[in-house]
Amino acid sequence: MKIFRFLFIFALCSCSTKVNQVLNFNPGEPLRVAVMPFAFVDSKGEFAEPDSSLLIDDVELVSSHPAANPAQFAYMTTLRELAKTGLDIVPASAVEAKLLHSGFGRQDLSFEVPKIFATSAQDICQKLLSCDAVLFGKVTEWDRSYYAIQSVNSVGLSLELRSARDGSVLFTSSIEDSESRGLTKGPTGFSDLVLEPIKGLDSKIIAELATRSIETALNPLRIDKRPEYLQTSPPAIYASAHTLPSGRLGSANSLKVLMFGSPNMQARFSIGDAVEQIPMVERDEGHYIGEFFPLAADSFKDQQVYVYLTDTYGRTSKQRLGNTPITIQH
Image 1 (tube, one colour):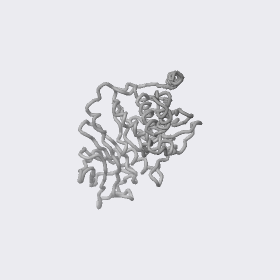
Image 2 (tube, rainbow, N blue to C red; image 1 turned 180 degrees about the horizontal axis):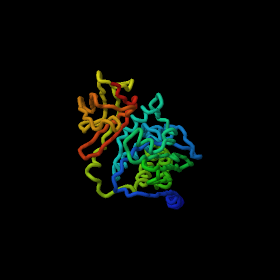
Image 3 (tube, one colour; image 1 turned 90 degrees about the horizontal axis):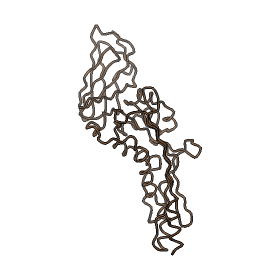
Image 4 (cartoon, rainbow, N blue to C red; image 1 turned 45 degrees about the vertical axis):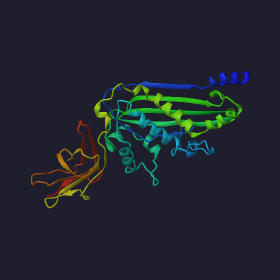
């Protein structure tokens, strides 16, 4: 018994946490952030396809079987924890929908993560989403090892927040954490001594470790009291289009603009800088439509159409339509 007690005390000191963080902005200032799907990288730092078996194990009876691989789990947990910060987070549904419809998705609806990481924050916020900065995340380690009567769970994560204005890095946070199960948790008998390490292999254990690690990684961004407007998500524009595939607008036709986004908002569209702030009507929940009839005096060429959605707090989201630019042809 004395031997077991000595081993328990020794193993209890084997856990380690390494954190490295740099903050280059005031987290209390308004900043709209789009969070990209997370990447999983190997020991060389190269992109790898996440293996769901790293999270979902087959230990009968003790496995909790969560339905997510490490990158997905870290991504979803980070989104939840960001609700405790002063950042204005673009809804994940809007981010994912735009990525999938902009050449960043596969047929199985997964994401081309290397392509996302190769895209600048400026391009993401100016061409795809309405945001001020982009958060990129990588799972750098996700390991469960079993050594006789002890198991070790290890998690590594890195986060980088990049400005859409100039591409500068606003915040970085990297963390490596591990937790042992077995002797470290002080089993009270031989049966516990054998079972506890096996429980340590359960995905629930590493999921809890990852959650704590993400909380630590995001700690510099937390604020004591969040502004009222942050209790709701900023306006999200999921899709938009206009009805002139040729881009030619004449006196005999009109330009109709359609938008699908957050419901109960103020919607409008513009045609470049030639025609601005045309109201749109919400016909069905989240479905907006607006129409422009050219006058004889109107004249412009190759003007891009933009749609805008504004909430009661004055927050506005903007999206450029992917259709052909508009030219008036009398």
